[in-house]
Image (tube, rainbow over all chains, first blue to last red; front, side, top):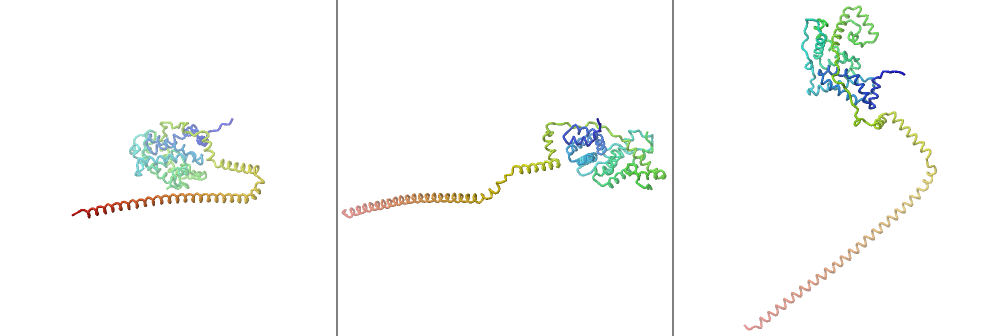
Length: 187
Length: 196
């Protein structure tokens, strides 16, 4: 008997044939990543969960359009990206995108005792919230989701040079924002 | 400004090829400035990673609904039509089957007989059509003549009746005038005879 890990491609194939349980298994593999990506983009848990459900529903409805099952991750995150920015546009018809308004926290204090993990987490959330949605998304896709530049370009539908420019600009801002915290050290 | 042969950020994010990575490794070991730059980048990166992933508050899942799920037959049907390879194979199979059936059941001698009979059939059809048309025209003309005669007879009858009625009217009128004239003559004669 030969054991083989069930690949995403196997589950996609079965889901395409109408096996809902195979698709549920696929969701269980990806829901945490998609949810956290959306949470860091929109900044609200409830909305992130609603959008995650929409993303997986749309993915199921369009699964037949996925040409290469090996490209499932960028394809899924492309849907998530569209859902997140579509939600922004619905909330703000004028086309204004959210910035730090959704994200808690104020300026990061310099000096004082070493930062606790929770404090660090809040500080990072605040720093991310100060970025524009495009810059924030570039950081999230690279640092938290670990996508390659080519995959990010596929998700964001823009050239790799644009992706790198957004990410490195965001990193410069974050470096400046988080410098006071780093000077205090982390417990 | 970094003097590294490649972008330290590309190095940090693992976007460099193996040979390029090795060059950066060697450079960073010898260049303290680039070493510090890389350490700062690593520190920022590790600080950002302090933000942990959250658990999904509610599991996402779909339930199979027999009402909305396509039946097995429908799924097979859709799968057949959405597969160009299957369609191509089916088309080729049908074409082959048609060729085989045609080869076995072809009516061999019928072609020459049909060619010779065609002129005869056309002539017969033409004769029949001509006869039918002539018959229909004759019947139509006879019907028309009969109808005309009937109408003429009715018209003459009405004319005679009308004429007789008119003559009677004239005769009656003359008789009335004559009677009035007689009465008038009588009255005049009486008036002349009476003594004044």
